[in-house]
Image 1 (cartoon, one colour):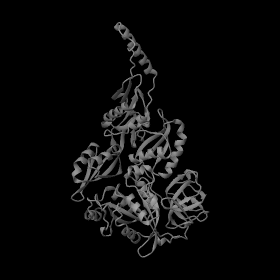
Image 2 (cartoon, rainbow, N blue to C red; image 1 turned 180 degrees about the vertical axis):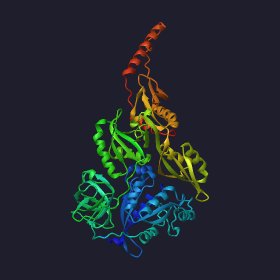
Image 3 (tube, rainbow, N blue to C red; image 1 turned 45 degrees about the vertical axis):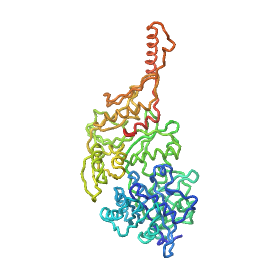
Image 4 (cartoon, rainbow, N blue to C red; image 1 turned 30 degrees about the horizontal axis):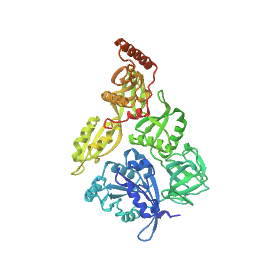
Length: 601
């Protein structure tokens, strides 16, 4: 067991694409905790989807031994965290289990919006922040400018910043020394009652729920009986251990340690991320402060492609919820798609990731409905209802007024792209509240705009108009009045409830036309014409037609009178008419996904 004064717990935080995972790779490589034969890039990104997209989705804890220049042997527990705004909750949980944070700044891009957000998260937990300037090997690297931004924008001391190149491994030794010198050791007492915080979990088919914990005081070893303070359930510990890219068993976990517990937990509902674990025979006085409840901002329904897979999908959702605490869900049903779940997400990227994880990790074939936000509707009777599902939208005649959520969006961009970004924000109904020049080359603009406008395409278009240099961060600021309508999509006169959307009235026509165009491409042609219509109430505002497949009934009719041909055509017309009355249009899964596509795609 390593004494607590020789342990350092820290996380790696930064804006997206500033090199967190690459730096984690260098720390692992330098510590030689893995055989070179098994080494590959992005060691802390376990999911295929993380490697494909080049982003971190899950925080990943790793324990590595380090021998300092003076010969002292330390144990470093570090967590590589995501940089995207949709996964801020992962970052906040990682921060709660550490004493320090490496705040990475890209030498070529400087301080960006998520850098600031993550720094404030770390400051809320009184973490020691060590600034690290990465990518110093790039031709565009401007180290003096990055240092000025650390002083001016972040209010940190740039003189202690460590300059590294995670790609080449430059400055990694100096970074290790700075970590053991600057980041404080844990302060918990080993002989006190056990207090351990659950900061993550994952499910193993053979061993049940594996809990990731940070021990703040006391100790836990195999054979102990532990209690979850939130659910008041007890289990006997089978194994304790640490993470060195895989699970490595250890004799015990003591104050200051980050590791895992296996206790044969098969009931998933007993475990909650943010709960406190204590010893059942010698419990602590009160639970540790957990994490603040996460509030979803994007809502969508998930349905199994085959309705018989509903129970299997529910089990998969429970296991995914263990590993993704920011996902919320409840039961839902649709006339078109049967039974499913109404889910809350932290953003559109979060929604995409959940969809891919369900398909890859749990082998589920699922359909997602078009995402929407939560609207607040005041009825003529005076009561207020909250609606995030178009199926639950009240009758227009009973509504007095409606409100939609607004966000404060902070965008940091090089000055040459400012005009493009202002045009984009105005198009998305944004109102500028502030603009300040951070230095000669960078400007920060602050807009207040509806959250619904940011859901589709905004992030992609922002990156496009700024060539990837603009950074974007937002927080919710409350509800404001809006003119809301429900757009129904009708296929051959029948409304498909899973395709209905709640939209701002000014955008309703464009939205309906776009959906109709996308569906026309996806729906396979039948023996009869298929009308695809967008409607507000009984008013049709958009229409597309899928033409019928036409059999050439005149092929066998050569020569003769025109009346013979006309007779055959009339007979075909009657048959198509009758077929249209009884024929059903089958919507492929791709039709539901097509609704999510933006015009640029």
